[in-house]
Image 1: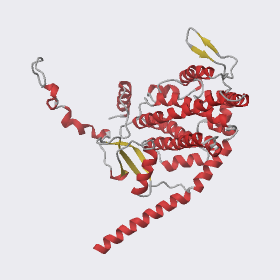
Image 2: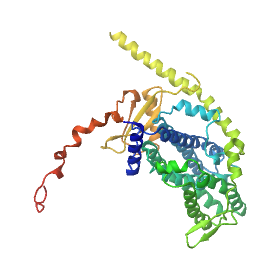
Image 3: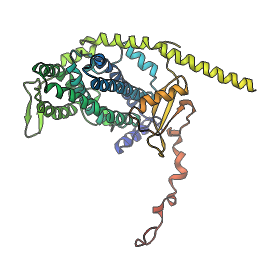
Image 4: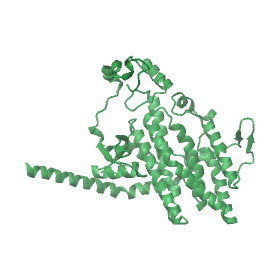
Length: 318
Length: 96
């Protein structure tokens, strides 16, 4: 079969809504775009553990601590699901991890912001995981089977992340003036970076059209962002929080919450490595990798030793 | 082991509930079967409620599906008579 027939057949399968599986033929660009997206996504899960890990030892009580530990552990698992799915496309785990460690790989810009107070943990669970769920619910329908299956699993687990975050914020909003201020301050700092998570405007998103055509994405960045704002504004208002956007207003006709312009300069600066915590995150990730090397070495030594025993036993019998 | 070397891949099959089939859920990297099983539990069964887990070395799985093998399923594709709705019987008859 020649290249153009193959391409046409592939497009037809996508059109019909057939899922693409690892051993199916696919255009190189489809494969590469997916590896790019999935590796960034996996790295985000892994780096995303760092801002929250910062508060595990300082959680205000045992209930909060258990929830946060479980959440952070989930994020590690989510990273793994997506790395596994990326491997089905021929990407090597070694290479993906290496790209992250040397600072070449991208991950969600939101994790380059610091978690200054306990309220940030609530706001992150509610907003950042909330935004991730909006994106991942769409990706659960994506045309690549392994990615879509990983997303289904992740979405099922992540609903607790969002709810525990919102619960933290609700509790603070029922507390002292100081606690309410702390929650509002956290929202003020995280609101805009959260909106940036959906990526550039559709008009500035060079990969969007192809990704939509191939049903890797089923909605545009701006559509997803609007949906997120629409569901989040009422949640903020219910507990007395004010969205830090003077231009926010409800449009009766479109039923959308219209919002102000994002600071794209900040977005691109953080992506390029100039966010508040980029260097800290990379250092923490490298330290963790280095400090964990003895575990990997020990498990290999143990496996070899056991393997040796098996061979010995076999030889004795023989 | 080099600093960044990855351990062998084990595909994970999980029985979601007692009596059900083992279904593929993903994979883990581990030096041996025992650790693979523990990793699989930590990664794919964090919320419990699972029957059992199998871990299978990736290189032992031989799969169909590359498009060079398109005629692979041909022998069964054209045998509609293997399905009950191939057969014509009076509609009024129940419990057939």
